[in-house]
Image 1 (tube, helix red, strand yellow):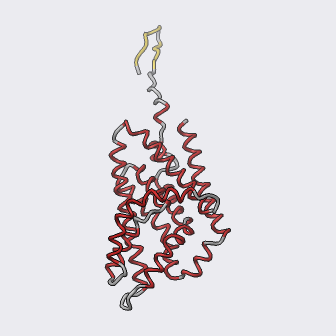
Image 2 (image 1 turned 180 degrees about the vertical axis):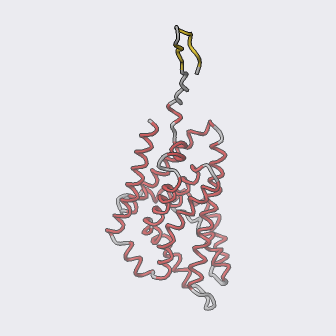
Image 3 (image 1 turned 45 degrees about the vertical axis):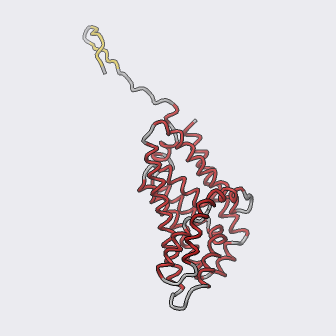
Length: 261
């Protein structure tokens, strides 16, 4: 604020308004931190992705869990196998989230990489949209995305071979750790959220929320494999869950476009 020239008894005041940020500043980074993708809503989103993706989890991971159980020696209880397998899997998801969040934190500190935040947000939700359509039985595009992780899995598979068949309780946890790196489109989508979070702690928290969403289905699959698989593979259940996931992804993309353009 500055004073204008005096006119009789009055003083004219001039206010210098701060310049409005350029349009391109309203990017996905702002959207992540202050829009619908901030805080609790993101955690809830990732939890629901994991939960409603139960049909996909049962199809991909349920068979593995059952196979491990069939090879158990008598001195290891099935309960500990299921608990430690999932503890190892969740630990790997959190590790992935921390590493990607740290990578995103480095990137966010550079203005030149702001465009990358936009790309990550869009990619995460486009992938989520494809996964929703896959869960609903309407598209198979998501299965092609899962093949991207096969080179990493080929390197880890020999380590898994050394732990199988499971002969000890610690091996249950070790197998779970490797299981967490199995190529999975749901994990890829959640990982993009972690990368876009711009924080190692937040990235780990995002992946924990996703992992907890997958936990009820996989725990139940371990104890009630036959009953749960038939329920989650039911056409109407898969359709409803898939459309919910796809609809949420589409809504977030529309909100992003509204805030950006």
